[in-house]
Every structure is written in C-alpha cells, then in structure tokens.
Image 1 (cartoon, rainbow, N blue to C red):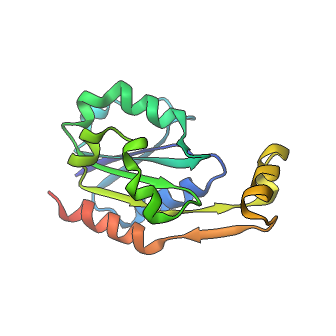
Image 2 (cartoon, one colour; image 1 turned 90 degrees about the horizontal axis):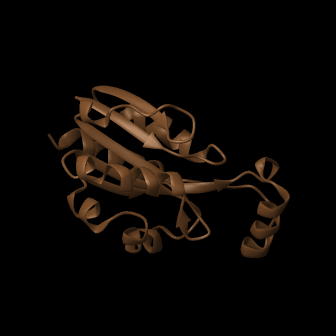
Length: 160
C-alpha cells in the first residue's frame, strides 16, 4: 500500500507527529509539507492522510485549500484526518466539521487529535503575548498524545 501524508506545520510539532505516525504505518509512506514541497499527483496513492495544527480556532489555510482543491479525489481514497493543537481533545473532535467537510469526516478511516506543544523560544512576539494571555503562563508545554497516534496508525493499517 502506498500512502501520502500531507500536512502543514508552524512550529514543528505537527511534523514530529507525522514522523512518529509514518514509523507506525505499513507500506510505502511519503510525506509532503503543504508549504514546502511541490505536491504529488494524489491519484497515485492508495491512501491519504491530511493534517495540521489548529491556531486560534482555525486549521491553517493550506490544509483547507488543499482539501477544497482536491475534494473529488479525496472522497475516493482511503483517508485519515488529524489535527494538532492545545485545545481540549473532546472539543476539537466534536468540532471536526469546522475544519474538514462533512463528506470527508464521514468517509474517513481514521480521525484523531494528536495534542500540541508550545515552545516559547520559537514564537514571535505576538504569539508569545497571546500565549501568555490565554494560558496565563510563559512556560513551554508538551502534550503529545502517543496513544492517539498509535490508534490512528492501527486503524489505517487494519482497514484495507
């Protein structure tokens, strides 16, 4: 099975999740950052995994644009959808329709929330200010949900 993971990352947490996920998936895995690489012809893949971080209640625009531009093909593929961020897991999962079209959510083999992280030194002044206001802290945060990545990979591996 040939799988493409298409993702966007802002401060590298999503990329770390993609690396962990790719190690747990079976078959040939190719990773594409929606911001950095020329994108492949997604028709050549058996399955597709799409994900990115949620910032200030919105998934990054590159994810929305990719999904919108490729919706017809995505609806025909074995599909996994994931999000990253610091919001509450249950809240994000209950609001998936804000981030992905309902048709993809309903047909996806796997859906997950992988957690999030804040690394203060990697942020610009504006981001640091918002983090201080929202979290009432200026400390780094790491909330990587390894179990979610494991379950997501198992679902993608088991569904043929």
